[in-house]
Image (cartoon, rainbow, N blue to C red):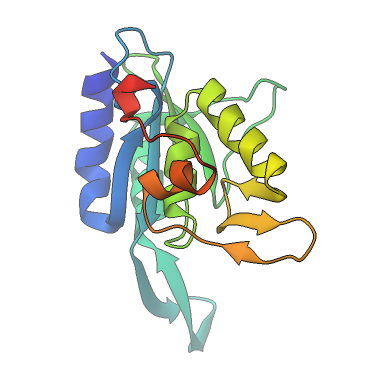
Length: 179
């Protein structure tokens, strides 16, 4: 069921994203999944600001498409574990209306893509190993940011691929379904 939900949502988002991937337990090819996690970088478009005819505004087309899925009754907002709605620029917790499957949508930037992908793919144990190894090396892993930051000097290290996240901290890279 989750695979079908992922396909349905991604079929709409694909045209309005520069990058789009299903992460989490689906990417790890688990038989049982609790939710659909989708990581994306939305395309943007400059438009006339409806409130100021002399100004322009930048619109995220993926965010617009997600609102369209909500308006069409495909997705609805859901509450987080604290009972609050999480629907913002970066994180959107939704539910697929027809199936009830939770859908978590995560917007990111090109600079944060690989770290965010590793983190959202997981599992948690893998993320803990990366963070622990980074700390032992004197770095802090920022999975939602640009990568690794040296604790003492503040030097930042960005990565250019999923494998590089693991290799930077001295861990062997394993494909998502092997984690």
